Length: 70
Image (cartoon, rainbow, N blue to C red; front, side, top):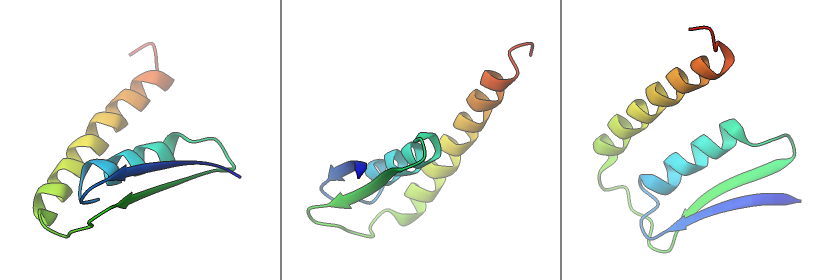
């Protein structure tokens, strides 16, 4: 089994974003996880705002990748 683990302290923002991005880009058969040495739920609202911003940025980039004439 091939996989990628994003490990940080809180596992409340960056590692979860990295996990989401990696899952969307990983080839079939590659498993992706994120975890924290001291997981927390602090900053939940900020995390959701950041996720949306990353999603919007990635969506724009992916669209550009598949539509080079634009």
